[in-house]
Amino acid sequence: MGSNLQLNNQIVEYINNHSLSLHPVQKKIIEYNEKLGDIKKMQISTSQCHFLHFIIKILNPKNILEIGTFTGLSTLTMGLAMSKESFIIALDKNYETSKVAKFFFEEANVGKKIEIMINNASTSLDKIIKSNKSFDLTFIDADKENYINYFEKSLNITNKNGFIIVDNVLWYGDVANRQKKDRLTTKIREFNSFIKKNNKVESVILPIGDGLSVCRKI
Image (tube, rainbow, N blue to C red; front, side):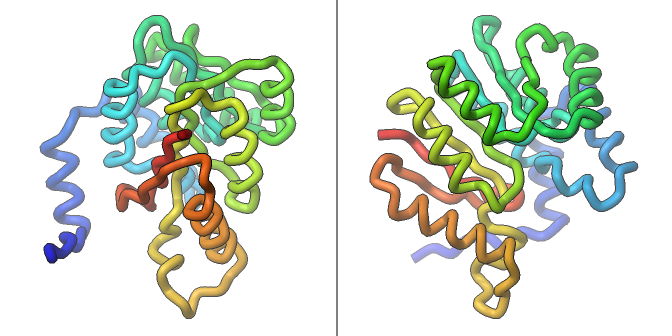
Protein backbone atom coordinates (compact mmCIF):
# COMPACT_ATOMS: atom_id res chain seq x y z
CA MET A 1 0.00 0.00 0.00
CA GLY A 2 1.42 3.36 -1.04
CA SER A 3 2.03 6.03 1.56
CA ASN A 4 1.17 9.72 1.35
CA LEU A 5 3.92 12.26 0.87
CA GLN A 6 4.60 14.28 4.01
CA LEU A 7 4.36 17.92 2.98
CA ASN A 8 6.72 20.53 4.35
CA ASN A 9 7.00 24.23 3.53
CA GLN A 10 9.62 23.59 0.86
CA ILE A 11 7.37 21.16 -1.02
CA VAL A 12 4.31 23.41 -0.64
CA GLU A 13 6.30 26.32 -2.08
CA TYR A 14 7.45 24.13 -4.99
CA ILE A 15 3.85 23.06 -5.70
CA ASN A 16 2.60 26.65 -5.67
CA ASN A 17 5.46 27.81 -7.91
CA HIS A 18 4.58 25.14 -10.48
CA SER A 19 0.81 25.57 -10.40
CA LEU A 20 -1.52 28.32 -11.61
CA SER A 21 -0.32 31.87 -11.27
CA LEU A 22 -2.49 33.94 -8.95
CA HIS A 23 -4.37 36.94 -10.31
CA PRO A 24 -2.78 40.28 -9.31
CA VAL A 25 -5.76 41.11 -7.08
CA GLN A 26 -5.53 37.73 -5.33
CA LYS A 27 -1.93 38.64 -4.52
CA LYS A 28 -3.07 42.04 -3.24
CA ILE A 29 -5.54 40.40 -0.84
CA ILE A 30 -2.84 38.08 0.49
CA GLU A 31 -0.48 41.06 0.96
CA TYR A 32 -3.25 43.01 2.70
CA ASN A 33 -4.03 40.12 5.04
CA GLU A 34 -0.37 39.79 6.03
CA LYS A 35 -0.73 43.13 7.84
CA LEU A 36 -3.73 42.00 9.90
CA GLY A 37 -1.86 39.92 12.46
CA ASP A 38 -3.20 36.62 13.73
CA ILE A 39 -6.58 36.89 11.97
CA LYS A 40 -4.84 36.49 8.61
CA LYS A 41 -5.21 32.74 9.23
CA MET A 42 -8.87 33.19 8.30
CA GLN A 43 -7.93 33.34 4.61
CA ILE A 44 -7.63 30.20 2.50
CA SER A 45 -4.20 28.95 1.43
CA THR A 46 -2.70 29.39 -2.03
CA SER A 47 -3.13 25.66 -2.69
CA GLN A 48 -6.82 26.01 -1.84
CA CYS A 49 -7.06 28.88 -4.33
CA HIS A 50 -5.75 26.52 -7.00
CA PHE A 51 -8.22 23.80 -5.98
CA LEU A 52 -11.23 26.14 -5.94
CA HIS A 53 -10.25 27.51 -9.34
CA PHE A 54 -10.19 24.05 -10.87
CA ILE A 55 -13.35 22.79 -9.16
CA ILE A 56 -15.26 25.83 -10.44
CA LYS A 57 -13.89 25.33 -13.95
CA ILE A 58 -14.79 21.63 -13.89
CA LEU A 59 -18.26 21.87 -12.34
CA ASN A 60 -19.26 25.21 -13.91
CA PRO A 61 -21.77 26.02 -11.14
CA LYS A 62 -24.32 28.69 -12.03
CA ASN A 63 -25.23 29.64 -8.46
CA ILE A 64 -22.59 29.65 -5.72
CA LEU A 65 -23.07 30.27 -2.00
CA GLU A 66 -20.22 31.17 0.31
CA ILE A 67 -20.51 31.19 4.09
CA GLY A 68 -17.64 33.20 5.55
CA THR A 69 -16.04 35.76 3.23
CA PHE A 70 -13.42 37.61 5.33
CA THR A 71 -11.48 39.90 2.94
CA GLY A 72 -12.62 38.00 -0.13
CA LEU A 73 -9.81 35.70 -1.29
CA SER A 74 -11.93 32.56 -1.69
CA THR A 75 -14.82 34.57 -3.13
CA LEU A 76 -12.60 36.28 -5.66
CA THR A 77 -10.95 32.97 -6.59
CA MET A 78 -14.34 31.48 -7.45
CA GLY A 79 -15.51 34.70 -9.11
CA LEU A 80 -12.51 34.76 -11.44
CA ALA A 81 -12.99 31.11 -12.40
CA MET A 82 -16.76 31.02 -12.91
CA SER A 83 -18.61 31.67 -16.17
CA LYS A 84 -20.22 34.96 -17.16
CA GLU A 85 -23.65 33.50 -16.34
CA SER A 86 -22.69 32.49 -12.79
CA PHE A 87 -23.34 34.41 -9.56
CA ILE A 88 -22.08 34.26 -5.97
CA ILE A 89 -23.96 35.11 -2.79
CA ALA A 90 -21.43 35.58 0.01
CA LEU A 91 -22.41 35.67 3.69
CA ASP A 92 -20.42 37.46 6.38
CA LYS A 93 -21.32 39.34 9.56
CA ASN A 94 -18.33 41.69 9.56
CA TYR A 95 -19.07 44.98 7.82
CA GLU A 96 -15.47 46.22 7.77
CA THR A 97 -13.90 43.14 6.17
CA SER A 98 -16.84 42.89 3.76
CA LYS A 99 -16.16 46.48 2.67
CA VAL A 100 -12.54 45.52 1.98
CA ALA A 101 -13.66 42.44 0.04
CA LYS A 102 -16.03 44.55 -2.12
CA PHE A 103 -13.15 46.88 -2.96
CA PHE A 104 -11.05 43.97 -4.20
CA PHE A 105 -13.98 42.50 -6.19
CA GLU A 106 -14.45 45.80 -7.99
CA GLU A 107 -10.73 46.07 -8.70
CA ALA A 108 -10.79 42.60 -10.30
CA ASN A 109 -13.93 43.49 -12.32
CA VAL A 110 -16.10 40.77 -10.77
CA GLY A 111 -18.11 42.97 -8.39
CA LYS A 112 -21.30 42.71 -10.45
CA LYS A 113 -21.27 38.91 -10.10
CA ILE A 114 -20.99 38.90 -6.29
CA GLU A 115 -23.53 39.91 -3.63
CA ILE A 116 -22.44 40.12 0.01
CA MET A 117 -25.15 39.69 2.65
CA ILE A 118 -23.89 41.25 5.88
CA ASN A 119 -25.59 39.60 8.83
CA ASN A 120 -25.38 36.56 11.08
CA ALA A 121 -24.86 33.67 8.66
CA SER A 122 -27.67 31.57 10.11
CA THR A 123 -30.09 34.49 9.74
CA SER A 124 -28.99 35.07 6.15
CA LEU A 125 -29.39 31.37 5.38
CA ASP A 126 -32.94 31.42 6.73
CA LYS A 127 -33.70 34.38 4.46
CA ILE A 128 -32.23 32.57 1.45
CA ILE A 129 -34.22 29.41 2.24
CA LYS A 130 -37.45 31.44 2.32
CA SER A 131 -36.59 32.96 -1.06
CA ASN A 132 -36.49 29.47 -2.63
CA LYS A 133 -33.03 30.02 -4.09
CA SER A 134 -30.91 26.94 -4.79
CA PHE A 135 -27.21 26.44 -5.38
CA ASP A 136 -24.89 24.18 -7.31
CA LEU A 137 -21.95 24.73 -4.96
CA THR A 138 -21.48 26.03 -1.42
CA PHE A 139 -18.18 26.86 0.26
CA ILE A 140 -18.23 26.96 4.08
CA ASP A 141 -15.41 28.67 5.95
CA ALA A 142 -16.94 30.41 8.97
CA ASP A 143 -17.24 29.96 12.75
CA LYS A 144 -16.60 26.31 13.50
CA GLU A 145 -19.16 26.05 16.30
CA ASN A 146 -21.95 26.36 13.72
CA TYR A 147 -20.57 24.10 11.00
CA ILE A 148 -23.28 21.45 11.44
CA ASN A 149 -25.99 24.11 11.44
CA TYR A 150 -24.59 25.76 8.31
CA PHE A 151 -24.17 22.43 6.56
CA GLU A 152 -27.72 21.28 7.26
CA LYS A 153 -29.22 24.56 6.05
CA SER A 154 -26.98 24.56 3.00
CA LEU A 155 -27.98 21.02 2.15
CA ASN A 156 -31.63 22.12 2.00
CA ILE A 157 -30.81 24.61 -0.76
CA THR A 158 -28.24 22.52 -2.64
CA ASN A 159 -29.32 21.00 -5.95
CA LYS A 160 -29.05 17.26 -6.45
CA ASN A 161 -25.47 16.36 -7.40
CA GLY A 162 -24.45 19.78 -6.09
CA PHE A 163 -21.37 20.21 -3.91
CA ILE A 164 -20.67 21.54 -0.44
CA ILE A 165 -17.00 22.19 0.32
CA VAL A 166 -15.95 22.84 3.91
CA ASP A 167 -12.62 24.27 5.08
CA ASN A 168 -10.54 23.57 8.22
CA VAL A 169 -11.75 20.00 8.73
CA LEU A 170 -8.25 18.82 9.74
CA TRP A 171 -7.80 21.76 12.15
CA TYR A 172 -3.99 21.95 12.02
CA GLY A 173 -3.90 18.16 12.37
CA ASP A 174 -5.34 18.36 15.89
CA VAL A 175 -8.42 16.28 15.00
CA ALA A 176 -6.19 13.19 14.77
CA ASN A 177 -4.39 13.91 18.06
CA ARG A 178 -6.27 12.22 20.90
CA GLN A 179 -4.54 14.47 23.41
CA LYS A 180 -6.26 17.52 21.91
CA LYS A 181 -9.62 18.04 23.61
CA ASP A 182 -10.18 21.78 23.33
CA ARG A 183 -13.57 23.16 22.31
CA LEU A 184 -12.89 23.92 18.64
CA THR A 185 -11.03 20.68 17.96
CA THR A 186 -13.96 18.80 19.50
CA LYS A 187 -16.42 20.76 17.33
CA ILE A 188 -14.53 19.89 14.15
CA ARG A 189 -14.39 16.22 15.15
CA GLU A 190 -18.15 16.27 15.75
CA PHE A 191 -18.69 17.86 12.34
CA ASN A 192 -16.51 15.29 10.57
CA SER A 193 -18.40 12.45 12.27
CA PHE A 194 -21.69 14.08 11.31
CA ILE A 195 -20.65 14.18 7.64
CA LYS A 196 -19.39 10.60 7.73
CA LYS A 197 -22.79 9.39 9.00
CA ASN A 198 -24.87 11.63 6.72
CA ASN A 199 -26.65 9.51 4.12
CA LYS A 200 -27.60 12.54 2.01
CA VAL A 201 -24.03 13.10 0.79
CA GLU A 202 -20.94 11.23 -0.24
CA SER A 203 -17.75 12.88 0.88
CA VAL A 204 -13.97 12.84 0.93
CA ILE A 205 -11.47 14.80 3.02
CA LEU A 206 -8.59 16.26 1.03
CA PRO A 207 -5.37 17.32 2.82
CA ILE A 208 -5.22 20.68 1.02
CA GLY A 209 -4.47 23.69 3.21
CA ASP A 210 -6.07 22.98 6.58
CA GLY A 211 -8.20 20.19 5.12
CA LEU A 212 -11.20 20.36 2.79
CA SER A 213 -14.26 18.16 3.05
CA VAL A 214 -15.77 17.79 -0.43
CA CYS A 215 -19.37 16.58 -0.29
CA ARG A 216 -21.73 15.73 -3.15
CA LYS A 217 -25.48 15.72 -2.52
CA ILE A 218 -26.98 12.40 -3.63
